[in-house]
Structures are given as C-alpha cells and as structure tokens.
Length: 286
Image 1: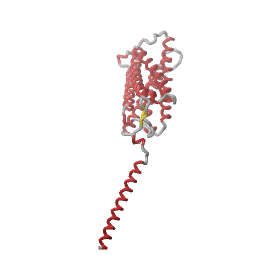
Image 2: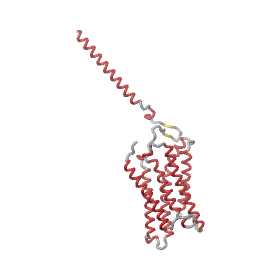
Image 3: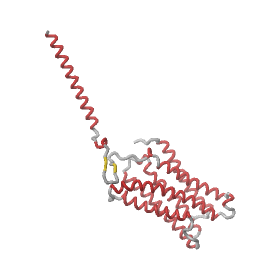
Image 4: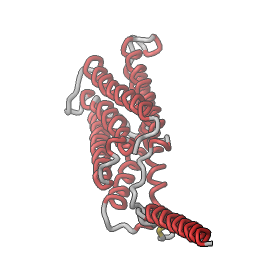
C-alpha cells in the first residue's frame, strides 16, 4: 500500500533524524568542550552524564520509538516484530534515563547539594516514573499474549495519548534543565552577557524543540498511520469484534457475480437468435 505524501514524509523524517542527531552531538560538545568532560566519581563530571543520556535516550531514542510504526518500509513486517522494536527502543531510552537520574542524585549527595527542589526536577522525575509505568503497561498488555482483546482495545487510545504527553513533557523538561544549568554555572561571564557557551546551549535547546515539533507532526498525521492488516478485526471495548461486510465476503465473489451475469446475457441472446430463426423459417414456408 502506497503512502499518501510519501516524499513529504521522507523530507520530514530526514529532517527529524538530522535535528535529533545534531542535538546529541551538541550535547556531547557542550559537556566535553565547555564542561570538562565525563566521569563517574561524584564530581561535576558525573553530573555531565545527565544531559548526555537524557538527550540521547529520553529525547532522541524515544522520538524514534514513537514514529517507528509510521515508517512505510516496515508495513510489510509483522505487527509482533514492530511491537518488539517499539518496546526495545523505549526500553533503551528508559535505561539511559534512569542512569542519568542516578548520576544527578550521586553528584548532589557527594557535594551536599539539595535534591528535588526545582520545577525541573519535579517534572523530570514525574516524566521518568510515568515513562516506566507506560513501558511496563505496554509490555504487559500489548506485547505479551495473555491480555484479553477487550483490555487492549480499552487501553490503546490511553497508551497512545499518554505516550505523546510524556514525550512533550520530556521536551519541556529538557529545555528547563539546560536553562537551569546555564544559570547556575555561568558566573563570569554571566549568562545574561551572551557568552559563547550560553549561545551554544541555547542553540541546543532550539534543536531539541524543533526535533520534538517534527516528531509531533509526523505522529499526528492520519495519512501516515500504519494501515490495518487485511485480516484484522475491529476491537470494541465491550469485548466484541466486528468485520466489515466487504471483508467478510470471499475475494472471488465479485468475479462469480460477473461471470453469472455474463452467462445470463449470453443465454438471453441465444434465445433471441433462436426465436428469430424460427420466425424466418415460418415465413419461408408460407
């Protein structure tokens, strides 16, 4: 099945991948060039893992996981395979997010810095917890085979909606985080004086925002949604299933109807020819 607006989809997909990849590169350049690198010793070097892992996993990989069903060259793949890829990408993003949170808490505890006092930390931790619950529910209900169809039908719109909300929350939290880090870190020169690091990280924030906007646009276009499989049934929350009348008819029924109509027409024509011959014979004998 051909995708409507295929080339427009490819252009947006390529743009999203490019902007997302640049976001990861900009984050690495930030911590390696401006913030002295990475480490795991409780110092600021350990804290630097937080933006790197968050942008890589919670922003970039999660964004790809959201649109993986929209890739038209995967529409011929089995739904189970695509579910596994979707779950695997989200699992990787969740693992990286958890490690990044651990890095922050260890850095704060070693340096006697208070935890969970800013709006960024509140919203961020809520997003991580909701993401883990979303991943657990999706794995239990949609990937494993024991969930009843009625439960899947009931939870599917909630699963889709909550996934988009969580991703949007992550984008907002990332923007709050980079701004908070610049305000606390840039003293001389101050953030308000447009230092090179501040301009560079502001550009990173714009890349993250554009990446989120592109993912939102791709995932909300109905014409780019993965088509239903030919033998799929429509699930209702009440537990019933429904198949379209056209889908329940044999594939060859239309051909049979055409053949029967053709045979009937031939029979009528033959009778008319026989009647004409009989009339002609009667005239010849008179």
